[in-house]
Amino acid sequence: MKQFILFIVLISFFDMFSQLPIMSPFAKSLGATPALIGLTVGMYSFTNMFGNILAGYWIDKQGAKKVLLFGFFLTGGSLLLYTIVSTPEQLMFVRFLHGLFSGFLVPAAFTVIANKGEEGKQGKSMAISGVAVGISAIIGPAFGGIVAAKYGVNWVFIIIAVIMLIIAVLSLIIIPNGTTPISRKIEPPLKTLVIIIKTPMLATSFIGAFSLMFAQGVLAYMLPLQVEIFEFGSQYSGMLLSTFGITAILIFALPTNKVFDTYQNHFVMMIGMSTIGAALILLSMSSSLLLLFFCMILYGAGFALLFPSISAMLANHTDHETRGKAFGLFYAFFSLGVVVGSSLTGLLEVSYGTGYIIAACILFINTLWMFVYFRSKSQVKESME
Image (tube, rainbow, N blue to C red; front, side, top):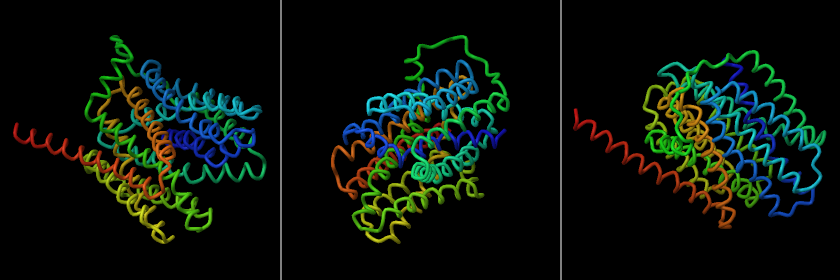
């Protein structure tokens, strides 16, 4: 059961990562202008945010299993639509649907993981799920690029669609039906969102998610440019990103994952954010390949500390009735971070060094106010005792 849920997480992220190397060339082959290519690529993350939020409400009303099933069937169907598009406008519409429907998958999968997790061991559960995310980040782009080059871009969509439809059928059999009691008191959707966001620990988790993916968006945009400027060879962009992914996977999977349940989530979170910020500052000054690889190892360590801690923080401060909405918002902030990070640096037309420093400042500023907040909270608690 646990292994199957982790496989679901892997495929959910694999779908997104496999399209990174092929979507821009695909849009260009249909005659899209550079501006339209950018909108087409970004449309997925944009509508994904709304899918995350909608999924959150649906999970808490109908259960995570039902949302997961519909998510896989609808996402699989939208992937098959890619094979019949012939204009940039049609491609953008399919991206709209694809992003919206795939937004159902990750909140539902992580809600199942959180609900099945043992009390006091949510951090380790989220770290293990991070292994699945890391693996998909490594093999997804390679799969998309190789299959598209060898057999054509349509086969990328067809293969993933078939896998998703098979998983939907297996999920129907393997995942037990939820027995979560639904509250009789139905709060207005907007009021519920406000209540969740105003909960300090959940708001901290959301800000951590946004900060992490803002940095990730900047990194995805700037690292290939940096490698190109120093003429290291385009293959090193993939190798550097794989280095970050492998580092994160090792920390997720090895006994180091005990740190997430040994120390307080917000403490590990702040260390992770500071580590990523330091890695980005070093990246802005790096001009040698060896130093770039060191920076990506450091970045991967920071990612590995940050991702499970913010996920566990959310799981530990929600119950069965609000967890779906909270995870929906959580991954909406993930998508928002990617969109804002890559779009802002692109619009400002900054150099790779400046882009890294902007992302690092976001991380350090958020770390600083969190440190002040949790320190003052601790002092108040001590004075009351």
